[in-house]
Length: 318
Ligand code: TXA
Ligand code: MG
Image (cartoon, rainbow, N blue to C red; front, side):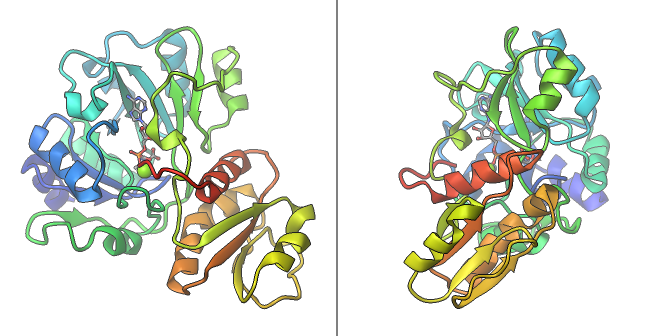
């Protein structure tokens, strides 16, 4: 723990577990540390990174104009899987905001990372700890597989906090005016946001630059084929050779030769298992993963979103 804080103070990078996915953290006030994050990920400089805070009390250091509804939402959910995109304060680095007028803030709930944050006593810039365009890591081993060759073994660290409980990235909410805008689905649902804020949640993202919310993100090497339950047999019939299958446990295995990559019992288990299952497909050198989409309830909404993006062709973005 002390080592991690010392490394951060020294402008080195520390990969940290959060409840969603592992993040690659550096001092959000240090241009040197933030530049290292972008270099390690191979991420274009125009993509903003989320600032992780020890506590909601730190918010005024990063924004001077957060809407009251957003503070109420954060107070209810934090520490937890919610990122608020708010107007940036005067001291926030341009690189952190990707040159935009807003900054993303979040208080994560993993105990190890909360301890690092509170001992560090400031904001940590931390995108997901994967190479640009890849699947987010949900174990320390995934981080090493992704970034082991680009981290500095004499200075940077990877903290092992076990497998991330949620398994998909935080819900991102645009919070710069009267309307909550869902910019990325996650474990915090539209229903929860509407209930806590008493406001209608907009899902229209036109004109908002949130790079992770565009096509072909979160993709493994294998081709992902998302299907509704009723479409499984048809999808199976079109695949030549062995394929990987991700489906809820109550979905009967097809006759064809396949590897069951995950059999989650509900939407939360699906999210928890998803990224490890996609990595396993690549490790097993499968060409195709058929993913039977979970119902659109709870975090199932975010699982569906990620699977549809993983299947999309086009530009890889973050
Ligand atoms: O669960 C998470 O959010 C994880 C953990 C580590 O906290 N972090 C994460 O970071 O997923 P990243 O950088 O992989 O994805 C953050 C997304 C990106 O798509 C980025 O474009 C968007 O948040 N974002 C960050 N700041 C933004 C801003 N000021 N305006 C619009 N989008 C922003
Ligand atoms: Mg990411």
